[in-house]
Length: 236
Image (cartoon, rainbow, N blue to C red; front, top):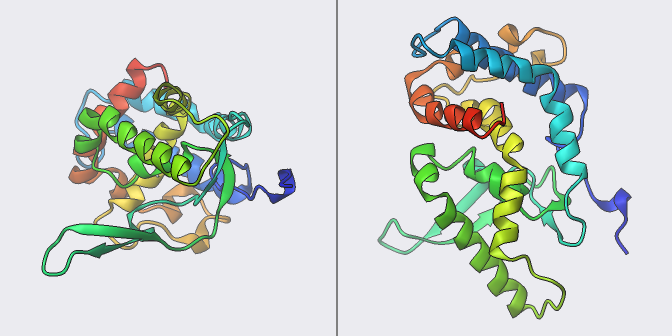
């Protein structure tokens, strides 16, 4: 039988000094960029910047509560760091069409909500301009794949409904905000020197984060509407 000691540890769901430094540091850097109109951030974002700034002292605890309070009747084994660089695609010969995918880098597998990996991937590796108008399409595709595979392997317990998928995605909106604000700047950065891991534990955010990843035009254009949506939805 599997008990809590076997569940693994999700870096975003467990409060530890490294996670707190990275997440709080990213929130600090992003809010500073909006408030001070740095880089490609124009005037008019100061209020949202201040809202983001207020998340600095509560976001990590919010993520931990989301992680601990998932519906225990349907937990799955999550990869824990599902973004594009941890996925290898096989493509059809002589084409650019992907036909298979494999996950790599299993450093943070954990049992938890059946939506953690989905929300993480959608908000770190799918272009927001594609994700936003197609959220229900993407969630539906996941739901149908999940259902088909569970039935194929003769799973006889309760299978989540599409409404369950939508409700869990809504519950994890604060996590979506966290991933957009703290992980996505790194995953879409033009530079390979987005973060200096050697300084995280001992330096201030300005020293271990590259400010440019929060202010470059590509990131600003993609994330701006997400931040507005998080305000409308009451996430920040």
